[in-house]
View 1 (cartoon, chains in turn yellow, green):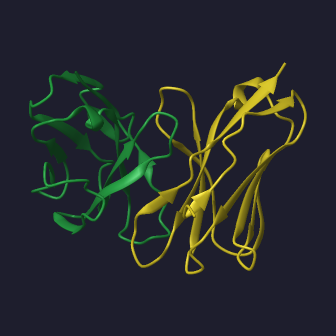
View 2 (cartoon, chains in turn blue, cyan):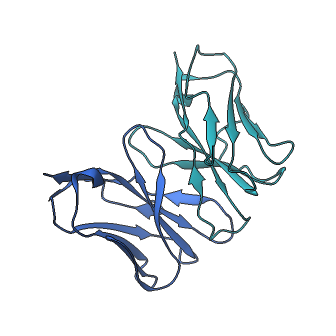
Length: 111
Length: 115
């Protein structure tokens, strides 16, 4: 079992819809959770961080964390074609500062 | 600039050559990380520095890989006797403090191709 798992997609949503991206992790000791957006040929760009159970909202983005279920999600409201990218889930275990990444979910927003 | 700077952006080398990749982190950032990203995969951790100290090198795939950060700012990742499987994008990231909850900010990476 991979430490951080994501559906590779592609996830296709129409413009204006809600995109829901999911991630599960195996290390129960994980403390910090991050979502990065990566456009093709570009570097990962941090879009959300979450550290405690519940929801965290920032503009059109909402991150959700459920430590009991070892589950992190990212919701993108009013999806735009410019949101089309690969979304990487990353987890930090606390004992070390390294990030463990999933393989990423490719999101395609159809105009 | 204000972000993490990496050079070169692209590097082509013949199998067996040595390469050196440079990372200039965000000014004042204590922590510096190197990751390797294969096509279609997420970044994989290579090594971590806090200031000049290399605190974790568990991700380096072989003794052909070596990283240093002698003055606690710029870092160099060196790969000796390159192999085709070393072809990947090498990403550098930095964070302000040496704590796991600090977000890491990535550079644009060096795309390494071994012929």
